[in-house]
Image (cartoon, rainbow, N blue to C red; front, side):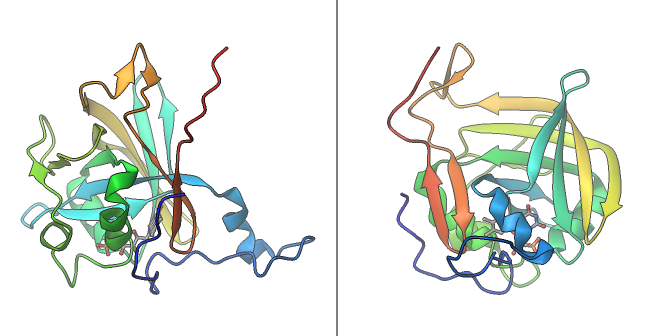
Length: 202
Ligand SMILES: Cc1cc2nc3c(=O)[nH]c(=O)nc-3n(C[C@H](O)[C@H](O)[C@H](O)COP(=O)(O)O)c2cc1C
């Protein structure tokens, strides 16, 4: 288990949990917490004339190989939502568990109030194609340009076409995630895990 960040989750980023420890039926409103753990990443985005921002995401997914599409679900209330609508470019940054405190900070503070780069010490690295920078500390990154977006419930699903991608040396071996890369898995509230020491290959 990754040591939990010292700061507890505030209103932002809070997951509606399924309530207590009892088994049995769960209300639909609390049900999405049953889909934990979720691999958790940082997206970088910006408005056309503003500084780049960071947002923590656990609702994201690969969608298509040809063209390469990657999607993410963003709550209407996020500062990042407005930036994504305005510019339509972003980067998905796959972070190691050593950066759990930074990831948690970016998921519990809004770019409307703080400069998350300054507060976390994460390093903006110029992207190859899109305007928002990638995160230098990430073990892999996908530069995305808007392909399609659709409001669904209280979120917008942004689908991006991957226009450039990066990986840290040694992070993958022959298409397999190497033990040196330690992705973050969100378990709920302020608790995270990473990939285990034991591996099974067939
Ligand atoms: C582990 C974790 C996962 C999160 N996943 C999402 C997500 O998938 N979509 C989303 O809209 N917000 C998600 N959030 C909440 C945002 O990261 C949070 O509200 C953030 O402060 C928004 O920043 P912004 O206002 O600068 O855009 C998550 C928060 C945490 C802690």
